[in-house]
Length: 626
Image 1 (tube, rainbow, N blue to C red):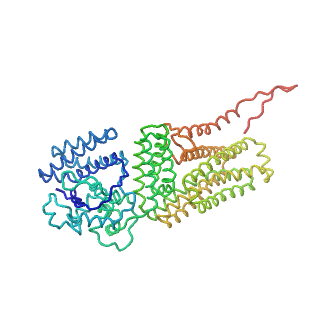
Image 2: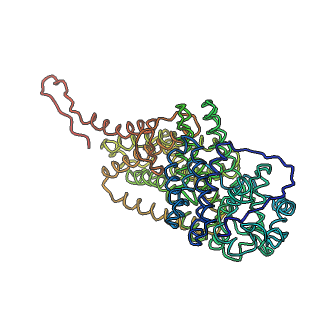
């Protein structure tokens, strides 16, 4: 028999601890974990049992398959779709057939079950390795030996023999702390290894992590950044591949204490609480719990997470909204949405300890600057180009003062209010600023459109260069530039702070590259804008401002939906965060109306007007506006 199956055999055979179990998970949750644990045994051990042709081992594998089917059926309707897959696995095991296929299917089913059950495969807190050592010596050394080698007299009389925790082949391949945790929780069917529910969850995690230190030498330095989720679900071989063979000892002997993962764990706990509230029928409280989980569990770490994995961040935001929507509609679908959300949060936890090299951080910084700065740059340069063409040069400095002030205010708001402007406060600021910017952009679009069609006004501008716009226009230009850049500068500062954790030098070089790229873009647009015909320039500028206003309107309304200030009205549509397009009627309908407004405005202006004939002459038709 492959010794991975018996790694924790007799692990707690003479348990003397009187600690009672603290069971934060429901009975259903324990059944999900039990099914996963059994399938993991089959995945690792069944191919070796078939190869050995041992009747004892094959019988043991059949008992595992029967246990798996029983556990799947115990889960009821929530796992009904998985029962046929377990039955297909059992049929092949009973015939001792298709070992590779069974192992593959068990592995795939484990991942599906973790997602469907919203299972946590890592501890809530960093395991206490010293406490784990005491538990091991008091309760496990009798079978596995004080050093974990299982060189004790009782081991020779046991079938299968207790595992040797210092065997490199055994410990490096196929075994993870999560598998060891499941073994202490549910035991190994058909062996002398029983379940130990008298140990608390934290005790079982501490013990599971400790056995991985027995064969590791002392750690001479600091371990690389790695999350609890990654450590709990990775074999030693996988850690060696990811971080280097020389880092495995430090990773196993020193537990991480990452603030980011703690925040995500708090989000996970809040989502779990929401699911329990929903199961009890208290959907209003469940919605509140989900909102708190988002604002206090995802928002504080979103900049760092978005810098590393923007796709996962987008999936998390959508999952939170879907779960909240299910709670609003008092739908049983809340349980399924919540489990998917828990799985995504665990994926986010797994990435918290990952590091990014200088070059990667530099490119991410550059992309963030271009993404956040492009729309603001287009607006500002469109205004500057229009003013230059109109020879209203005195107003250029007003626009410059507006966007420069926004950068300063955004930086100060981030530095001074980094903690105050977290979570809901930040979403409120982004949402309201976006809506104010929409109003200013519409004002600018109408202003430019009017000047583009009134040739008499343009003639006056050519004759006088000062005071053409008036005090109201000066304030309007300043407000447009200020509000258009403020939101982007604030977001950019937060995103870059998250990336700086991985590589401050990479952020610095990325900022330099981004500023140079944006400067080139500004010069290009200025040159092109200056050479374009006046009417064409104004039409393009008006279009750019309206399109940007439509985009910011969607983002602003979406931000207010995320903090619960506006209701959710989902529809079937695409999701493009960068363009402010979300599958929600509350944002799409106002965006559609705003996009159609300029077309309606132009259509009304082009309608022919019939004038009353003047005395002594025929009707006169005014010249067309150009």
